Length: 491
Image 1 (tube, rainbow, N blue to C red):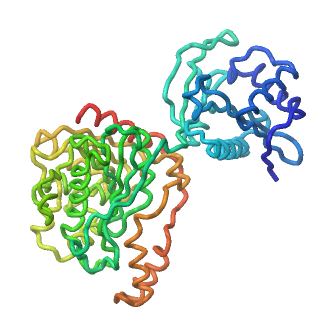
Image 2: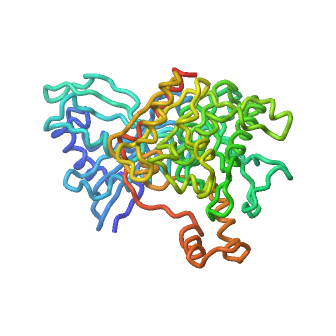
Image 3: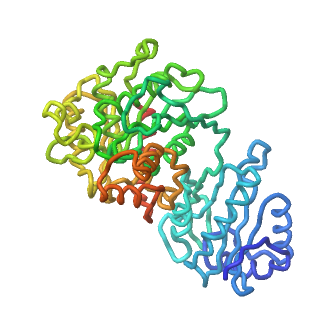
């Protein structure tokens, strides 16, 4: 059984044996000569004065080690550190590295470290001394490449690049609160079972103004998926946005069509945020909504129908509810040939009039006043065909609306961030399921009539948040940075 423990000075000989291979046989370290045993012990003693230094062993044999070190020797960098890891060259691909980094990250989080950095040799062209495995390993663990120094290392007669990779594990003075969207008596969806639409904020407590990102998760208008909620909000928070996740009204029972209630929920959120822009630290004219699947349809609906959505609160009705930009991720768009029919059934009902289907078929509703829009989809989406994005992009083009469309080559529906946090189910709290959980309880307590089949399905599938294993999609995981760059050049 693997054991992870703190380093001891008498481990130095074994650790030096592991390290020596990388000095003599690879360009993974840019060191030329194996240090002496005393020098290596001195390094261990210096590092352990401030940072954790750990080893992993099995049956008493050490197979790898990892430690943190000074990122930059100035006081302001004390919440950041650089990581180093070495695994016995004969014991790779056994999970030792992943286990060491997980333990090291936990230790560092406990002592207040918020930023992790890795300095990694990078081949100009892969050779016998250096490949890109280390970069791929760090990427799999949630690091992202943030910079390259070209041909700065010279070893074995070859020039090598050096890259910096970064992972943010802290929340950097994050302030988070729930804000109910409707006051008592303002909200009346009949199958809410005590639920009130709300938004949860993720704000920088720094006294500065930030662009605003409002996250609208998907879920076929049946649920509000946690997989596209807090995890996405924190991603954009770490990119400098003040963010909000809106939990809007849904219809998992298919009994009471939602009609314009979700649009009212999102419009109220936009108006509340703009009304309290100073309190929330946001620029009123840099407000983007970001939706996924049916949540993207909801975002698009607000983008094309914002003039139709009045607010019963006279003061809030004066506040502009038009987003400044929109990000639509694998969006439900059309009620026509390529529609996701269940989303429309939950929204407007199976027997809705043709006028209703036309109204919510967004490619038919775009005008030159539709906000600038960033779309992305995968070519192999198995639930909402990529043609939805093509149709909307064509409508934006005809209306002269600034936009971008990115179609990634591979990936199923619902990829969210598509990164390691997403693949490993680090989604945050499933608070977006509040109405769903309340509905399941109502079904269990016979407060609403449903078929035995529906009752069994709801209790089986939605009594708790359930997630399924997946892998990262490196191509798709680039989309937040691409969207951020687009926003910065658009609004």
